[in-house]
Image (cartoon, rainbow over all chains, first blue to last red; front, side):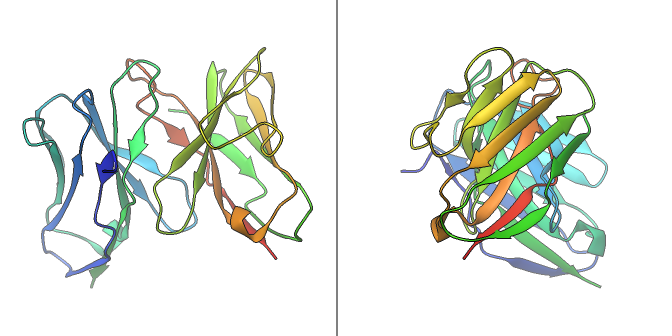
Length: 111
Length: 116
């Protein structure tokens, strides 16, 4: 079983729709959970950062962590064409432990 | 935040040759990280570059294949040696951010490497 599972299937949505992305993981030591956004030919940029369980909201973006189910989600409300990118989940046990990344979801928002 | 300049942005190389990728950061950082991003695969950590000491390599990566230099706190290079088509990938430099550990990473724009 991989440490982090993220269905890499591309996702196409119409502008204004809600985008829902998720990852599952197997390592119960993970306590830092991140979502990175990566535009074409660019490096990933940190989008959301959450410590332990719970929800975090930042504008149109909401990150949810359910440690009991080992499941994290990212929601994008009122999606815009500029949200078209690949979204990678990442998680860590903290300290100097390396990050474990998902494979990434390519999202296309159609005007 | 950190601004990371990485070059070259892309290159096409012949089998058996080597390519050195440069990474420059706009501030002093203790650790710099080199990642590989292959199509359809997760970002994979190659090694951690520490100033003043040898790089720490992850399982499956060796110094002879991926030598790393870290001459100061703002600069690092990764060399991909004796390249084969399997080395075709995006290589990313990153530095740690503000997390308790190194969770909040900042990335360069990457080097798209194609090996013929």
